[in-house]
Image (tube, rainbow, N blue to C red):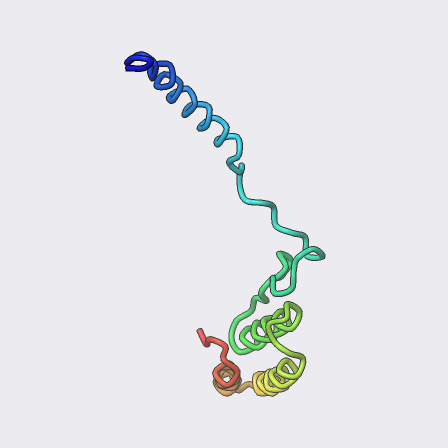
Length: 123
C-alpha cells in the first residue's frame, strides 16, 4: 500500500473548514434587502410612478375621475396608445356629462360599458 490509511486524514479534516469558509463567504454576498424604488424621472417605461395617486370621491364623479386617472397613467407609462386614450377619454367625457346632469346610474353604466369595450376590469 502506498501512503497507508493516514494519507487521507489531513484532507478529510480540511473539508469541514473549507465548508465553513464557503458558507461565511456566501453570507457576505447575500443582498441586504430590496433595492430602493427609482424616482419618477428614473422609472422605466411601463412603471407607474410612486407619485401616482388615485382620485378619491364617491358616486359617479369618483368613478369618472378614477377611470380617467387610470387612462392618463396608462398613456404615460406606454400601456395604451394616444388613439385609444383619445377614444376612451371621449367616452369618459360623455359619462362625466351624464353624471353632472344627475343621472348617476347612467354615468356608471357608461363607465362600465367603456371599461368592458376596451378590456378594463369593472370592479
